[in-house]
Amino acid sequence: MSASADGKTRLVSLDQFRGYTVLGMFFVNFAGSYLATPALFKHHHTYCSYADTIMPQFFFAVGFAYRLTFLRQLQSAGLGATLGKVVRRNLGLILLGAIIHGIDVRVRSWQELQDLGVEGFFETAFQRNFFQTLTHIGVTTLWILPVLSLRPGWRIAFAIVSAGLHVWLSHASYYEWVMRRPGIDGGPLGFLTWTMPMIAGTLAYDLMASRGAAGSLKPLLGLGTILMALGYGLSCLNLVAQGAETLLIEPPFVAPSYPVDYWTMSQRAGSISYLVFGAGLSMALYALFVWICDLHGGRLGLLDTLGQNALAGYIIHILVNRAITPFVPRDAPMWFVLAGFALSFAFCYLFLRHLEKHLLYLRL
Image (cartoon, rainbow, N blue to C red):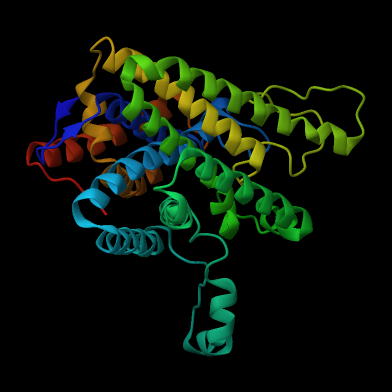
């Protein structure tokens, strides 16, 4: 543990894990759209690339901190005040998501707006762009709020029911719709499966709170491995649907040779296989940070800077990339893409380091 700016203790492993995730986000969000960038660092929506591992890690970290702060506030402020604070905070995050991500409606004239009408506006405005990272975090945290303070069994059951509901709705028609639209990060119903890594984060907090770093290491690794294997097993149901004779599909980081369907790991679809695997990978990776940071004292100041102000980093990197990417052509060689990323990262880090020095942290 280490002292934070507000006088409370911080878990070094969580800050470092979150800082690594922010750093990975900076890279894939800048480099992922360039032709020269290796496939592993791009979103493909048909398997789990390195780029696809980043967002589940954010949800895992949010779930960990969410359970920690909720229980702490519950003890100090009571149920009513705590629930009110959580609801206001996440409604604020959803509103911020609307500003940062935007909506789908685009009109070029007053007549076009009149023709669209109120009904047409709400039919089209929130189908795609609105449902990205910040919105999904806000909606998912509200979705799991009823079970947040309950025992692990209740939270696990809630995650299973949410996943089952997503499977049912997807097979009814939602999968076809969200892939055709196409949706972003699971679309409007993505919160049902983003529940997986967030609930996994709450379970990781329970382990750390009850067993400490040393006692949590093996359970974190074990549970993470089980979830990764389960996610991969679910992706193999694609073969059942295809009537294939083999039992195992390609590993998560390899492009599939069979036609994709709901069981394929896909960030665009928010498929259950992808997010169960992502939850497990996040938990296993967090165990590595526990071993390095909490048990052996490893720590990088750079990751602290990124991890303690993740929301500010998310907003800043979008603005910085908008300023730099117009000068990096899509067909630029990789060395030029890396130079552009280095410049983008330098600006982001300078902004975040300035905020850190002045003890300014963006919280919702």
